[in-house]
Amino acid sequence: ANVRICSQPVSKGKTGEGFRVRLIVVPNIPELVAVLHIAAPDDVKNSWICTNLMVTISVCKAKDLDFKISRSRVEKVCKDRPVTGVFRGLLKCSDMIDRDQGWLNDKGELQVQAEIRGLPSFSPTVDFSQELKVVTFRLAGDRCLYFDRRVLMGQSEYFREMLATSVWQESRTGEIDLSKDPQCTVESVSALLDYMTSNSFEAHGNTDLAFVVRMLADRYQLRQLVEEVDSQLESQLSRENVLSFFGRLIGSNSLLEAKCLKMLELDGQRILEQQEATLDQITEENPLLAKKLIQVLLQRGKKRAREAECSKEVSRAR
Image 1 (cartoon, rainbow, N blue to C red):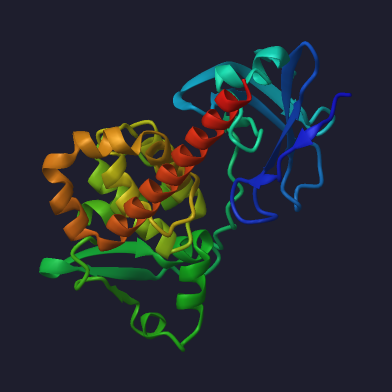
Image 2: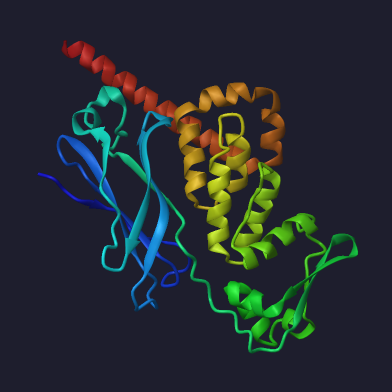
């Protein structure tokens, strides 16, 4: 029997403020099919339409994260038809259940991913009826950046709480002192502020800038910017930089951290051998990374031991 498998709805923005997307997968013999369901923000009551959405559905091999089957196309959804067209030709069900092909993990699970670009943002409204006040960001080296207080409060719940009450010193002085944080440079803080006005960020391959902007976005509760940075970093993830990426993401509980961990679980031995020359420096700079790597290798060793034992039992049975 065909069973619909639905993901938890993922929201673009805080709950209730952005479009929610749900991935629905049906193992519809003879092939797997998928569809996306789009729900508008809670406060959008009238008719709505989203055009030129770039949608990609991917099926990933459990034994090789770099191998996937993807289908992409441009979609249009609206209130009267809140689902995309059905994505077919992803994977034959007979191939999916064939263990030798490596699509399913040890738990019999299949990884299906959905990526959607072009959904409009629904940010909190900036109240331009308020008097214009400038907030000063003080950076190292006596550098300063100046920004509209109304936009800060409209775009970030963190800044909204900070600047709306006199309990915070920043609300009384109109200054946010970041001068003791060496990562808060003109470039990184400017990128954060620019995102609040343009809803756009491009690292242009600069991973150091991307990770700093990600840190600031997480600190100031700009979830959409965190997701945008992660998307750009994921496109650069490779065996050569996975240790560096993973070390910077430990504890973030992000999908990108999980992907780094999966890559290390599958191919950790070869990755460590490739990075042997710099391994001492990497683990010395990040002891938590060293601990995580030991845990990954131990789990991998136990898994191989179990597989070897199972293989022996099969041989004896024959």
